[in-house]
Image: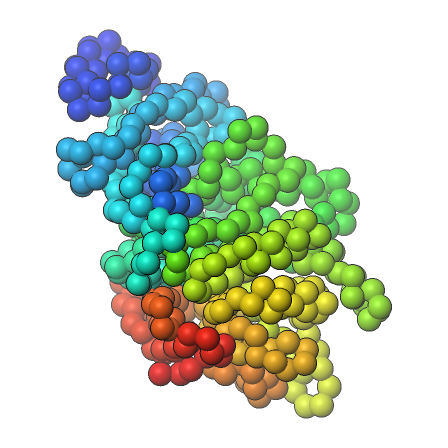
Length: 507
Ligand SMILES: [Fe+2]
């Protein structure tokens, strides 16, 4: 609970703060029994002139980590709180470049999303928040290179699938110590359920369906210090997959809730909690019945990252589709498909990174002459995949590289059109922690799908991509043991994609 402001404290901290934070005169004083910044800070969506800063004030009776520490179940009435922010060119905040005050309130779980503008391109910045007598940790972020800048290198990590109970986030601790420009998260940031056995820690609550339950789940994941460190170290771009809402949902349908009205209420709660916990731009008029998250992010003349939403607009998959029906199924929805076409046509960058949650390439799961495909992935939406690949081909994109997650295996693949033309290169990251498929299922996949040039199902970690004008180099990084909180991490495989030559090359 927030204590009532104490007048003596107000005077003392107000004066002290005023010297450092010129704008704090109007910030309401408040003291907190626990650190309101216990979920850390984050930044995202960098542009040449700006970035989004994020935090969420949290009021708990206990320090974060036990699952029930964040329970909002009784819906306590927390007042609105003014939060001051500043962003500086140096870590000591001697050269503050922008600052301001925003009011965080209960309607959006006291989350803060600040769209900063007026920054210099391709620079490191440092940012922090203050509320009452509490100061946040310092985050570091980087603006994108200017449009058309002749930038020669760019490094980013991509990650997915971080079931909290199935392992520690040592992969993020390793990532936070690297020299990166960006992190891209490809979905399954939270899991709605307790999958698997041999947990190292517990959600402590069942599957969420109401807003406060999704908020609690996000807060629990965000309370992890290694995840917090990776957010504080770099700007992130994020898209979602299914577990942010419920396993295998599509548009307004869920396998576990067949009543669209009830499911859409649950989905809106999940989308709202996701927004409240992600470093995405502030919404002018928040409505969570729909939330546009797909987008195109430019990083000078060298690369751009196009992030897709394959969940919100997909056609719910019937169990036994007729081939004629399948041709009209959409994974992205008509609007996002048209937007993707336009984006690819207009993009001039040397490398086009296309981030989507799963494997774009086909993956036959049946050993021998027959075929069997997942009904949750692109294989179930083959005509939609064909349209996406046509879009890449007709735009004559020089170097499309698809990145994904979802499958809890690492894959490197040559992406082929139906006519077997090599169209793009693809890398799927293994999970940060989530359980891998069985060895036999994985062996079948590798035996049946020669275009999957490499696979690894026993390791957990993430991928790095180092982009240069002549090549994109991809490192696959694994932790020594996801069940060990002190695990180390190391590269175990490396690939390059050469300029103008789609296809993955093992180093
Ligand atoms: Fe996953």
